Image: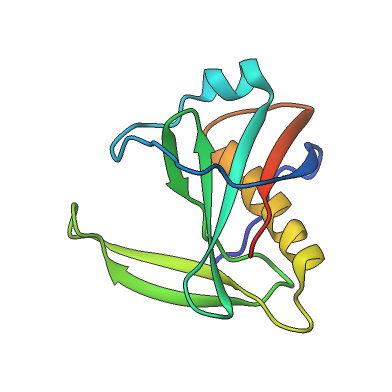
Length: 136
């Protein structure tokens, strides 16, 4: 298994934001890289899977994509499952919340997975603003 080796030069500025009362997204909507470049920002949403496992999603407009990846030096929980729509096996790495891995560690995790997501989307930027919804 290969851990993330994202572009270390991209500056990620994290801004804590609240959660909206409701959210609309298209299940099969693809993330538009040009919108990210134009806006210079993305939204990241943490969601508790269990009391200690956090699923992380990237939202751009009404497109959503899970970005649960393994990161060197940060403990994650590996979950292998079959995708309902494609019947392919997918491997998710949920962030593990603990006394040692608090919100500050989660922000480091978010920086790395967002950098990797931008790399996978072919986006090269000097700076990206991440609106990180505060977890409950």
